[in-house]
Length: 208
Ligand code: HEC
Ligand code: HEC
Image 1 (cartoon, rainbow, N blue to C red):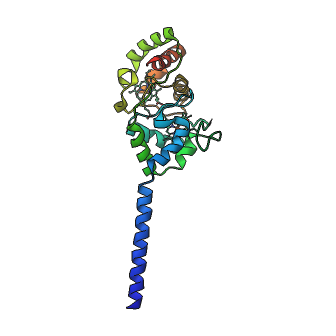
Image 2 (cartoon, rainbow, N blue to C red):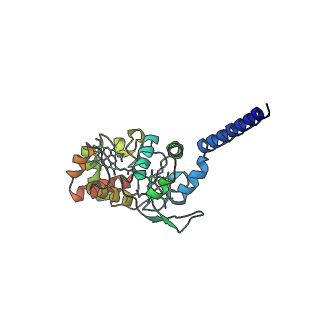
Image 3 (tube, rainbow, N blue to C red):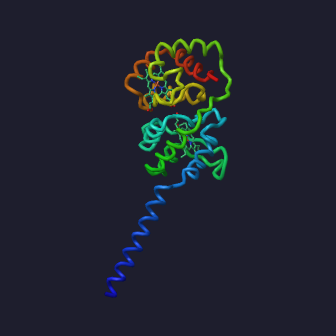
């Protein structure tokens, strides 16, 4: 009888423990997780560094897929210094950042940023080049990146108003086959001249 009681106590104790752990893991505070991201991407996923993309307002699906790419090192991770907050000045990259996240953290962060508004970057651009890029976009890219790459539900990132430096870098990664490309996007991007790639990127960056 005595033993049974101990058994119950242990059982109750471990159930309680299990619950605490489970709810703790499930409810990892998304605001806390996002503080780390804000050190580079800014509050609500918008920042003024030309090397760091704005991420607020992209679709949850795109964000989840993208973070899986980083987790499996399927796309390059550019090393950069944390811009603000507790870890300011230390260097890291997206592969290292995502490696520390559970699947549930990724899901929560994806929903969190999908709920923010995409902020178009205030950046300098070459208007003549951007005008050429508009035509390149309409002919080759609008089909999947609709309304000039501004529709989150396309699940293809957001190009309109994204950082020019970031877009240039990513097109280079795609063309060098360092980042996987949608199989129907590949022939479109590969068919462009260097100047046309520069122009289309300038076009996205010009959109306010
Ligand atoms: C040290 C700075 C830094 C931190 C911290 C950081 N990022 Fe990034 N992030 C970058 C840079 C730079 C890029 C673009 C270059 C690259 O792909 O490596 C990027 C790219 C991304 C992209 C891809 C955007 C796209 O259009 O495909 C997503 C999504 C992203 N980060 C989410 C996050 C989340 C979520 C966190 C927090 C858990 C986070 N980042 C923390 C610097 C950072
Ligand atoms: C058949 C559909 C399709 C076409 C056509 C297409 N894309 Fe894409 N694009 C996608 C998808 C899907 C993604 C997201 C890929 C991923 O999951 O990493 C993407 C991603 C991108 C990205 C990265 C966005 C980011 O936030 O990192 C850039 C830049 C891009 N496309 C440029 C272009 C350009 C320029 C053209 C026209 C020459 C083009 N795409 C044509 C489907 C397409």
